[in-house]
Amino acid sequence: MPWKALADAQTEGRMNMVALGIVGAMLGLPLDALEAGARATLGGKGDRVLTPSLDCIHSGYSAADAAT
Image (cartoon, rainbow, N blue to C red; front, side, top):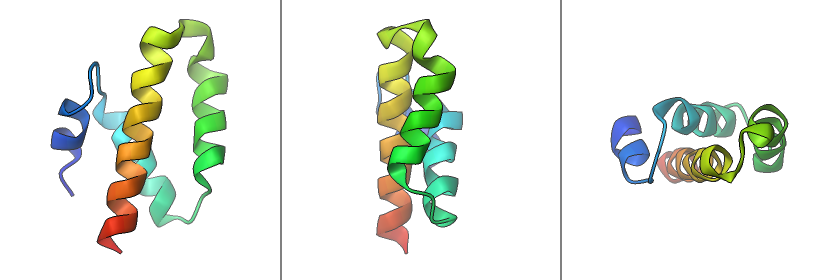
């Protein structure tokens, strides 16, 4: 799985957020649960941090779904 490439495709992308999306999808966790966790943890840091994190989670989740 191209974790770094997925993160690099996002402005301010973070590989750990891509990994969260990939692992969450592989474990069968709902995407909205991953989003809610990110919002609860990162929401206070503002959109500059939250938006790219959510984008990376979505990228990882989609990549895992496509690979299975």
